Length: 233
Ligand SMILES: O=C(O)[C@H](O)[C@@H](O)[C@H](O)[C@H](O)COP(=O)(O)O
Image (cartoon, rainbow, N blue to C red):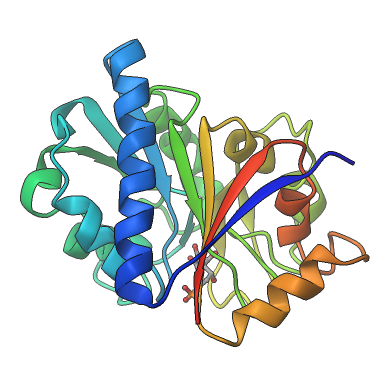
């Protein structure tokens, strides 16, 4: 198996935010230079706030950049569980306010009902992604690839034909929608952003043996492509 990870160990969350913002800005700039347009997919959850704020100050031609999410909880943007809300509050600010944002959720009652419209909206992005930034939960999930997820095997299939898939899982809270593994792996640059002492042993365990369905981050860690892991205690 070919694995090629780079672990960036930083002193604290502020240092991770700066290093990851540098990394993402470089990936966007490289793609902009080549194609004149670039897309970025980011994760939600609690970890990314400081990184979003650092990235939002970067001097990039944001009007040529489209931002979407790696995954979303199927809730309204008024919910504090909404990843889109987090992106609007912390990333689409300052210079980055000029970016185009394509949310993964809409007003449809379920992800299945909303899927078609989200897929259509995503057609406006420049594909493949210039950069995708993943997070990781304490159970080893990433994106909405949850252990026990009803569409987990399809979502982490490297040959998945769908780019976007609904997901329900016992520990996911609400129904979710997520980009699938091949879409994430096709990104020019792929980062995993984890912070705090509790996540390091989870990462170490995920790097060991065992099925990817048990710790779905393994599907990313085992993929034959470079992955940059940003971590601080
Ligand atoms: O919507 C989400 O929940 C995410 O995109 C998810 O995959 C997240 O990255 C991890 O759960 C880590 O979350 P924390 O940053 O909250 O630990």
